[in-house]
Image 1 (cartoon, one colour):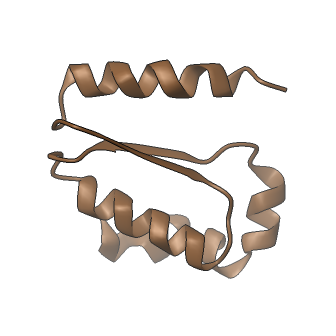
Image 2: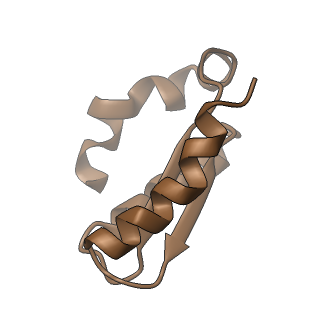
Length: 82
C-alpha cells in the first residue's frame, strides 16, 4: 500500500546502493485487475526513481491462482540462478 512504502521499505529509498548490493533479486508481479496492482506499479516506480534494480511484471487477471501460477513460472527460475 502506497502509504506504507516509507515505513515498510524506507531503506530502499534512503540507502538504494546498499539495497542494490544486498538483494540479488527484487521481483514484483501483479495481475492488472488485482486490487493491489496500483500499489505494486507505484512501488516499482519508486524503486526505479532511486535506481534500485528490480523486475516488475504485470499479468492479465486479478488476485487469482492462474495469475499466481504465471508469476511462479517466471520468478522460480530466477531464484535459482547464480
